[in-house]
Amino acid sequence: MKAYDAVVIGDANIDLVVAGCNEMPEPGQEVYVQDMTIHVGGGAALFTLALAKLGLKLAFNGVLGEDGFGHYIRDHFSRYGIDTRYIRKSGLNTGISIAINPEQDRSFITYTGSNAELSVNGLNMESVAQARHVHLTGYKGSRNHAEFMQAIERIQALGVTTSIDVGWDETGEWYRGIYELMGEVDVFFMNEVEAQQYTDLSSMQDCIRELAGHSKHIVLKLGAAGAAASVGGRTVYRSGFQVPVVDTTGAGDSFNAGYIYGLLNGQPVEQCLLYGNACGAMSITRSGGNSGTPDRVALERFISEKAAFTTDKWEIAQ
Image 1: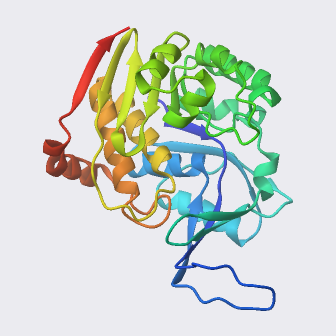
Image 2 (image 1 turned 120 degrees about the horizontal axis):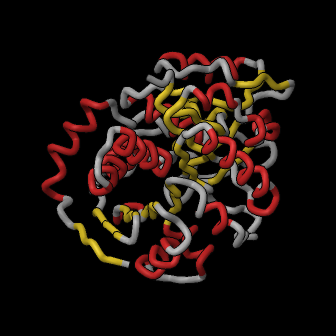
């Protein structure tokens, strides 16, 4: 028996969500808003919390400041049984992202803080040796591609499976070396827009067909439309759930957690997609990246109540 079902490395920060701010104040002015709430943020942190809520044993590798926000995140992790001993301390303050939510669109003000010191080289291999699975984030294309390839090699040498979500490339590089990384990682997550950028293709079927040529297990997130996965030349799609949208923050990370939850419990791809879609849908029904993510009982109840409306699925051979 391993001590952890999964070990995660990546970003953790504070999300300050400002609701009902429909105009920015001019210099010298003050604007009153509907609400302000504090949440744990960062894709890796949200994935970790979502998976821990589902009853799995997690350890987190990251970097946090020794300020009040850093302690707030550690305490929040501990509340869900997440091992925080591998979180490194920084002399910088913990990162903060202010999400301003007007009715039409969202804007962000972000301080990277302690996340600036995050590196996949900081992955504690002692924690990896005690895990069944490692989930990685923080890929930055050509800037740290070699580091990620080395990290994957070290993890695999310990007989541990891997997954990665590379996320949006804010530099616009869309480094094609990512295909090399796809060939090594056990489960590769990407959303539809990211897939279009990397492949220069427009349709979902064409994207996943292209990516499946480089990855043994690619999962393509399609937002409200659902998700598709291609494993060993077989592609499966499942439609999403229709729910009221309150806040989409962390929906993709919650999907990832649901999918990995199914995978680590030995479920087939169809069920992993169902869990992923359900976790992603439930997460957007409440404000904050992890407020709506379910525990195991709530997940099964949601699927039982809603699955009759999400029977669309198809399968194609590559």
